[in-house]
Image (cartoon, rainbow, N blue to C red; front, side, top):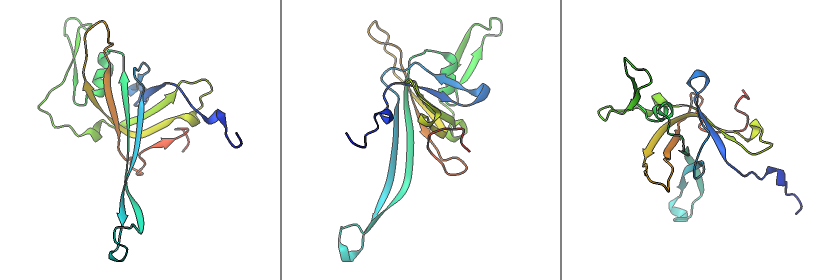
Length: 177
């Protein structure tokens, strides 16, 4: 096939990195695939003289989100993806811990938004293959089935918000300034 570069056809799982530095959480075990969704909203422009035939179309918004079904039941990771939750550690035995979610709080998700990067795990992956949401906030939907046929999967969707420059999604090396 002329013009086809098979090297650019990608396949396989990825790991998800949320946050940076000491605040970083890595989701490396997923079940069912990590799904990136990018959508553009638009409005068609019409005039009476052309009826319902659009004269042009204007992009009015861009939305990005990443669904991450991670398989590690880990209190620190739950704390990172449940906005407004808190970690409680037993005063006499620090190995006893729990994550508490309070229903009386109104949560501004933007306060929990951090950089989130998808890093493909395929052989030959370079930073040019990465996808980054500069500002992404987690929203979790927990539906655990406790039986022999199912793993405990925590479904989290990271919603992208524009950063201070208005950027919502980046394709390629996140270290390029």
